[in-house]
Length: 296
Ligand SMILES: Nc1ncnc2c1ncn2[C@@H]1O[C@H](COP(=O)(O)OP(=O)(O)O)[C@@H](O)[C@H]1O
Ligand SMILES: [Mg+2]
Image 1 (cartoon, rainbow, N blue to C red):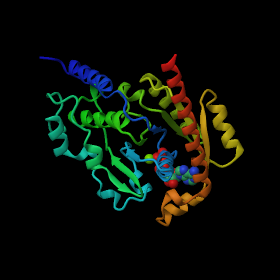
Image 2 (cartoon, protein in one colour):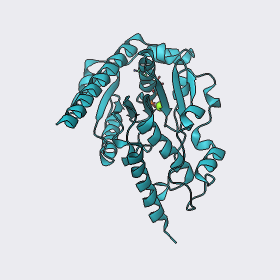
Image 3 (cartoon, rainbow, N blue to C red):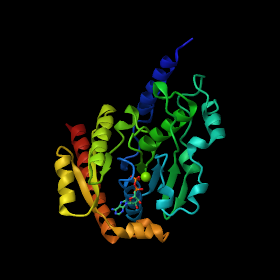
Image 4 (cartoon, rainbow, N blue to C red):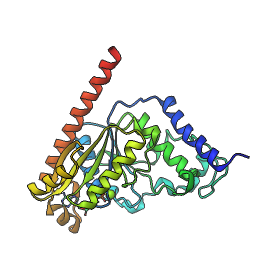
């Protein structure tokens, strides 16, 4: 009888192998967004998604934060009616061969997921959206059918979708693993001027480095003064900054008035467009670098 740990190791290995099987089809940008709760990950994810979509890209936004509100921020109608993938018990059982909640049994390590983005995403204003739901936590990285399905799905989205993927995560970046690290073109850590947000940025950075993510950058959000900007630059000296988003009360007013947050602040949208340009410029450089490396 194989131990739980052996099974968990097999699972981790299968995730690595799937990288080799997929290779990477999509050449379009894959962006992951992390940082402490409340710093502005979702607002950045939403406005970036809108910016890419308006520029003619096909975009899929993924809510991978269990406390997330990406659907509402993107003004999807009746966001509470969208069932997260982690709560689709019948689907989890159909694809993995085991009902959710059951640990230690045998289930498919690489369930079929390539049809799920089209079947289970919603579309609004030209942006597709999927809600992942909560990964189960526990020993051995929680070896269970629901996590196997979610991880396989994130791996597929990052490696095989030929469209811009924007992953709105929680601080723990649990949805990413070694298998997906190389597919992430940029991990953006959102920070606000404040000690706890800076501490959290260091933690996310360490977690990311541990799994092999190289391209990490910071966005400073809720900037009220040159001192706020200076605080972040001096607190995070070794980090690349992609941009600084001003604090704008208009976002809060729009929230209270139940108006679309992504259209609430011109100055925020202008800065997110600059971040979008910086991302494109950086990916161009990376792409050229890869091409040069292939020629050499
Ligand atoms: N630049 C900003 N100016 C004013 N309020 C902001 C700004 N960025 C985010 N907020 C507000 O802060 C709160 C948290 O933002 P959110 O994007 O949900 O953070 P996270 O996804 O990191 O938890 C929300 O109420 C949002 O409207
Ligand atoms: Mg959020």
